[in-house]
Each structure stands twice: as structure tokens, then as C-alpha cells.
Amino acid sequence: MNYEVQKRIIVMPIHKALKAHSIEDDIMYGTRVNKYNITSLEGLTLVQNFGNPFLTDDMAEKLNMDFGMDVDGYGGIKTVSNLFVEWIKGDKYQEIEPERREWLKEQIHEGRLDHTKFTYYRSCKRRVSHLTEMIKYIIEVRRRLRPYCYKNNDL
Image 1: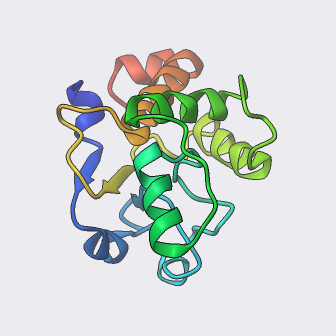
Image 2 (image 1 turned 135 degrees about the horizontal axis):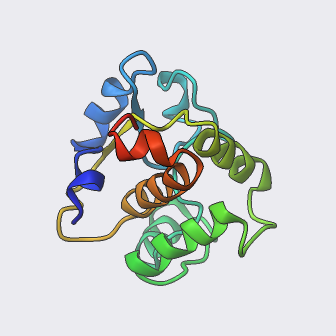
């Protein structure tokens, strides 16, 4: 995994990640939020968050069995991670959570995530995740928009 991407992911159990979330320290909770954990996440809402709206087949099956939900899976982790970036770009799935997608794009294009680190519940060193792909996309966009700053490590 690219060091530039890896250094921006802090791996910790979810219950600790909820406590580590801090706008002031530029550390954001990097996974899906829900009505149970949203109250402890300053600055994030059900619409304004960094979770992947696409579930893996395994996660969808677990939610359907354990919680009686009726949700679809979209494949494995690599597939849903790629779908996440296509969704942010607006290339596909524009009908899925358009307000949240626009909020994410705004955060990226306005540079609000240039120095942000994200908490995640498992290591991404040898595997892809929606966060690794989002961070790559942030870097790509910001390089294009501010090449001088990026060249001098100001981002």
C-alpha cells in the first residue's frame, strides 16, 4: 500500500474510533454512521459522513440475517471500494445518496480533507478499502487542483 495513503489511516476498534473522532485534531471516523453512533460524531450526520453506501455481499448477508434487514450486496471489498469512488466522482449510481455525494465532493475539492486522517476498524496495509480508494482520489484531485502545493508537500 502506498505510504502516502497508509499514513492517513488509523486502525483501531470501532468503539475507540468513535472516541478518537475529532474535528479539531483533523481525525475523522472513516466508516458508515448510523442512528446509534451519530450522536457522538461531531460534524458528521447521516448525510455528511465518509462511509461507503455499497455493502459487500458478506455484510449485506449479516445485516439481513442478524437484523432482519433487506439490503443488497454489491460484491467483494475491492468491487465495493471501486464503486465508492465511481459514486463520488458521479460516474455511476448518481441516484444513490446524491446529497451525501455532493457533500463529499465539496469536502475534497475545497481542500477540507487535505490533512485529515481517518479511523478504520481493520488494517488496510495489504488490502483495499473504500478509505484507501477515497484517499487516493483525494490526492489525485488535489494534485490536479493545486500542483505546486502538492509538489512541496503542503497537502
